[in-house]
Length: 258
Length: 212
Image 1 (tube, one colour):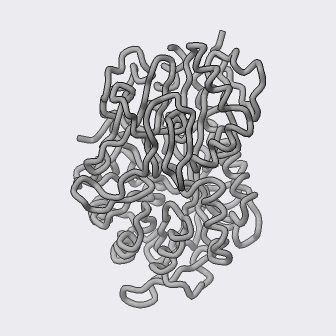
Image 2 (cartoon, one colour; image 1 turned 180 degrees about the vertical axis):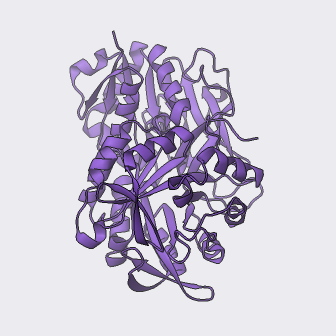
Image 3 (tube, chains in turn orange, cyan; image 1 turned 135 degrees about the horizontal axis):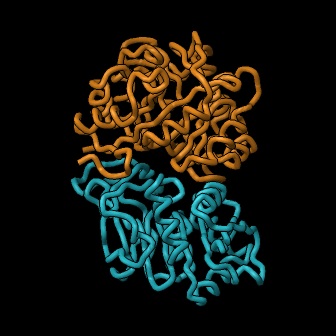
């Protein structure tokens, strides 16, 4: 039975927690701080903050949000969006992040992956991939919330990034993101098969059955946003569904589900 | 009087979250970047750390922390190494070549096996929340308030292999492969998991460490 972490994903725009569809059509959900504390209290295994405008407008306000939030949260925090240099990584780590997710800057200069892994360890260097289906069984890596093409094949890019030092992959399906129609299972399967580092699947969770389906691909993490933000399901409910589907998860009280 | 804890910052990894967790548990925490004579006066010494073993040891030596830890160990006051901070307590590591550790505990640090006991490859780094299993009695140790099977958070590619069984306090099972999760001898404690990132279970480990 494989162990999966249930990760609460918080997309941030300016001071707000937001949620969109296909990483677009954004709606304000509320205060990221309040939501993060609620997810921590409910038993999230990890929190993932992504500043969705940072890489577009070259700015970074995430650090303040993380600082305020990390003070009261005692589970791992991953931060992404607009991280372009070792200096940016350092700023995030000093704000309370445990890991950074890098997409755009890693595409632009893959050596950054190696530099971050060397300086902070590969466990800190999460490769963010925004994947869009371009043909059956083929996906292209995008940047800037699924707006910019890179010409890179997702599976090849994942392999190369792991060779360069990425210790984990955050795989977001732009096609499924925010749709509640389930994960892009062939995508998740191919990336899980291509690399031996942990992979987190993001984008598409809608129904309890989606957990068993994505769990069967060999993912290590399942990121959930929409269902939590709009209170369609709570973390204890999601974990109970995951356990019933045969996945090995941590209960909200820290015990095992068996 | 709150317990005075000194946390060693040797430039790798994230001391901030260890500091915050200890403060949350009621400690009065000082983070130091370089050893000074008074450090040994602290009630508790904590050595966190993520990243590579060799780089970590080089930084420890450059800052005089290797000698400080050894001197503190002799005071009988509780010491806690976390993750790589626990690994450097051992004799040596095989991470990217051969590197000598502090030699406070007998054993070596080796790569987490790339396959489970069934021979099938599993994911490295080993990341996730694993249920703690008892290797030795937990009464009177940092795990006194933890029940077996409570989960704690791991993120690592290398793990200690103590050469004396009695040093091992807890382990976890990674696809049939036992991984050393916590160690103990006298006043020395180490945990491979991150108590500062293991929610209430982890905080209970730190609270107990402060009460020892």
